Image (cartoon, rainbow, N blue to C red):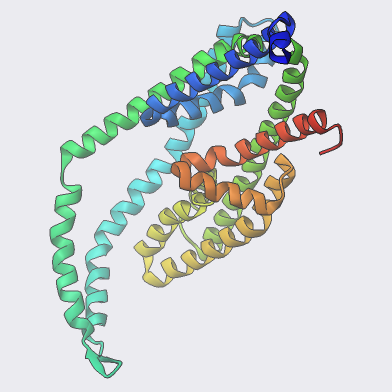
Length: 353
């Protein structure tokens, strides 16, 4: 009888049908994202760009500029900044790679001479001649490199795929930036009418958290870039500003970025002498470890209001699930779950979370 009475309650039945419709829409969205998983990175980064440029678009639109024109102006500014970065970094890469190519035979010969001068090492009573180890290694390396990097077709296809991903990213960013008000309105329409005020509260908190997270990422990237540039200048490497800029940009990749950013500086140091390369590698390792282990969890924890240990756990879980892209979304996703928990728990149990 109780079930029958409930079934005759139109208001309750309508509410649960709305909830079921919302859940079904979410499942469909997840299924679509799964089908597009090979291009998911472009969609995620495009959505991130659209989200980040919203304040600038809103200010330009409030000043009387049409929304489409405001988006175009912001995109042109982004392209100019990217072009400036490329013009600063590419000459360094061309110059230092050329120097490295000139000095690489000398460095390889010196390394081979050092290996040849090594005496056999006794390990558990067995003599190990390191010279016998390096000869097949060098032979295999010479055979391996042409097979892996000499395939121009593979390199061309990879470049084409990357270009398409970048183009798709900017298309998604433009469309989402153009339709941002409609996207929020459509999401709100899916939510049952009784819960739309809750949706508005959660939306505002999530948006505030995401902007705080982005500010935290920029602070970390700035610290790593400045410290790396100062370290390169102190050692006497050429173009320390460009090297610091590379370190700062790559530091936007959570945790792995600083180590990727160290590669150009190490190559520049190697083009001078191996000792310089070793010194810059040690300095980059020191800088990245101090900032990532002590500053990053604190800054990110304050930005998203998560304990530092949960920030690290979220990053590890994100990397296990989706690699570098998973690390990008792991902390914001964990912070969003925290916001949902803190909003729903008091309403279910009638006590603070």
